[in-house]
Each structure stands twice: as C-alpha cells, then as structure tokens.
Image 1 (cartoon, helix red, strand yellow):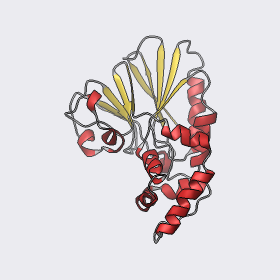
Image 2 (tube, one colour):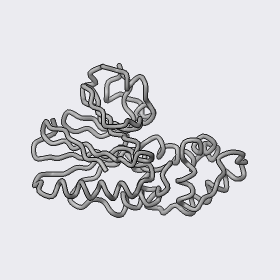
Image 3 (cartoon, helix red, strand yellow):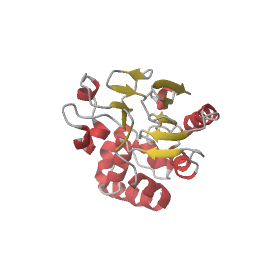
Length: 235
C-alpha cells in the first residue's frame, strides 16, 4: 500500500535513451491527467552509459522535470562510477567496459576502450570536468541511495538479505545481484529495483523489478502504485 491520495510512478534504468524517457514522461503525464491527489515520480538510477544521449537524459532530469510531480532521483552504479572517475581517472579502464565511452562522448570526450595510457585517462578526466555543466555534476552528487514510502522501498539494485533495511550498505544498494534476486526473505518492505535487465517487469512477494533493458529493447518501464494496486506503463 501507499498512502491514500498519493500516486507513485517509478522509472527503471534509462541508460542514455532520452527518446524513451521523453515518451514515458508523456505517458505518465497523460496517465496522471485526471488524478487530483499528490504525485511522486521515483527514478531508480542508471541514467547514463550504453545509450548515445546521456547528456540529454541529464538535461531532461535537471532542467525539465515533470510539472506537478515531486521528483526523487536515486543513484545507480553507473553514476557512482562516473563520480569515482572524477576522483580517480584509472577507474575508466573498468568503466569503458560497461558503457562509459558513450557518456564521455556525449560530453565531447574521446577515449579508446583499450590501450588507454594514464596520460590519456587524466586528459579525459580533465576534459569531462571542463565540459560537464555544473548543474549536471551537482545533480549527480545529490542523488539518493534509497527512498521509502508506504509498504515500499525504492533502490537501484537491491538489498542484502539478512541485514535490516536501515543498516544496508550503500555499495550493496547499487551493485548487488544474485543473493538478492534469489532471496525469498521478507525484507519488511517490498523492494522496487532496477539494475538487472528482464524481458518484462517481474513481481515477487518481496520485490518488483522494472529494468526492462531500455538500451537494447526499446522498452522503458514505469511502475504505478496507488493504494494497494500495481500496474505498469511501457514504451
């Protein structure tokens, strides 16, 4: 359940698909047109990497939020790695292996996936720092690890089984997979998450997965919660 008079929309991993984000925003706006209560939209992280329009995604989230909604932005592992790159250029050797080159390119940074020297990594770091709008960096640094409302906890990747929700490790919340996905434990809240792509949204007794692989599938998913009901919007 979510509190009466509230409708919650949660959006899964976007990964640089600004086109799909715009389309899903239109769908959400239309869906909520007749709703007179409060509206919250929760973004589950992984706004960047893999897709080609990463800067545009952040522009939309920063400068064009949906009017009439309270927006909650969570951090995904891809945003965490970008922030780490701005502190330690050598992390790019790993980042480039899972999609970082498209984010760098969207800010005018060219870096080869293999054979990068420390000098080229440091140059890429400096160029990204110069080219990234301050509003984008401030947005990334302000992302939340989780959000709770009613019977639900929203998080990027999941939670560690056996650990109380209020004592979860931040690294687990943005990176965990198998032990969480396989768990049948009652976590105390239904965990709404992304991070692990599925062909379709997956509802379990203890969790709801809404990463439908937008980058490669063309399907970006929103979970809609109202009272005790659950439904989905998909591009």
